[in-house]
Length: 158
Image (tube, rainbow, N blue to C red):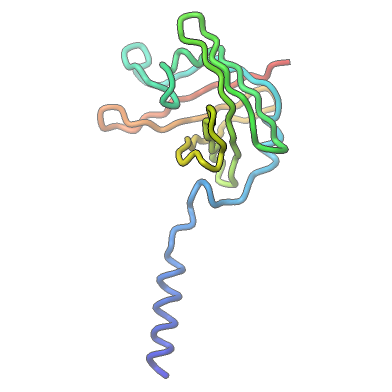
């Protein structure tokens, strides 16, 4: 009987210590999702050392290429489109799938020609300073051993 109680206690301890802070396994923040429904543009991309350090955003292009990019977010099916249109960069457009979890994390997959369930990698950014007309997505990157915030400032299009 003591063994059963001990085993039960140990298994309870092991399972209760398991991390539950996964970006993809948490509940959705539908209020935040509905608030960013619509058409947006990135008005700025800021990070320390932006004048001398080149950052490739979303493994696609230089972060400066995202200034002026157009984003469409559809909250009822968590799909959208991202379009880069900077004259100094290669034009690019792709469907995306996205959601915002209860921890304020924006989780996005770039779909290109694939279906969302076959894409195994994506991006997790933090949502900040959300209003009716603007919000920020903040990415954490490693620059020379230091974690640095890359802030994408979104402005609502009419």
